[in-house]
Image 1: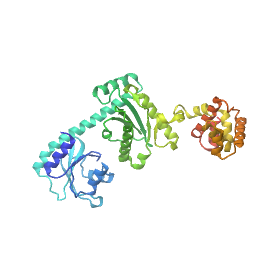
Image 2: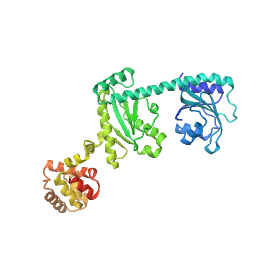
Image 3: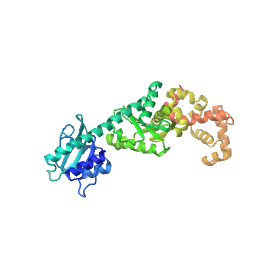
Image 4: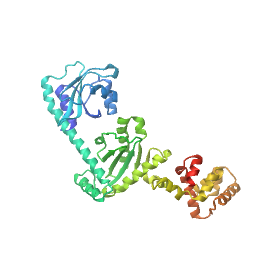
Length: 392
């Protein structure tokens, strides 16, 4: 029997609807509920989890270590009715709880409780198996993405033999980093089936199997990951999660390429907040340069001294040069966007050439200046401090 069947068996044994939650109070399964349920059960079903206050209330009664049924009283301030809790355990470890509403306080005869103990053990075995499978998959994903070629190759073979990911399918890696470096225990087993996951201090990495080439699977995985972080850290912390997405790769052997791209994308998001909270490597364009070396090295490589003279001058000339280059040298579009006469545009461009020494008719000079103007706001702190560092 699966977990839904076991919830049904518990419900049938007691003659009342039941709910199964994992040890972190995330909803796993439930059957049809009566019209009158308390706020806690309604919230658990709607949000797929219980709140921290509700969790603290129930845990004070020792349910996390109890070997047998526990009766919990009502708590009107939290909208809680009396309950019968059946801990779901395997080999001495609690993996979840069966919950049954018990308004009258007399649910469960000794014979019923004895008969349902075996159902709770079966549920514990299934949840333990799921937890072990999640840990094994997490370790395999860690090894797959390891820099050691031999370790990665063995992980490919193991993942293929277990059928966890289709070896020849497209895969993409999603790398997420949170503001704090703390280890956040997440219920990664509750991610969609096409996703493998691993986590550590301040990060979570997902491998998304795109066997049917549905790119929407990536968005689904990211949404679920945010939900898991919200459960542990709150909605605001989950919103600050930075998510980088690598390019799809044909086959597991190239997953490390996607992972490196995703990891670099998160670094770019941290450096350029205006890009948002999610970045696909394929869409980052010139911003990719930010992740390719120490900032000081990029400043020297990208901020050509000739371009720096224009940046130091500032004002309308910088804006004119930026628009001119963004519009591929189209004078009419430049004049229209800046609301100036064409002759004024030509005058400013001559001034730019005089200050910088660039010849704006040369493609290489245009490229050098355009790159510097585009990257300067990302590489320099604001104000004179940025100018000082750029000139070092």
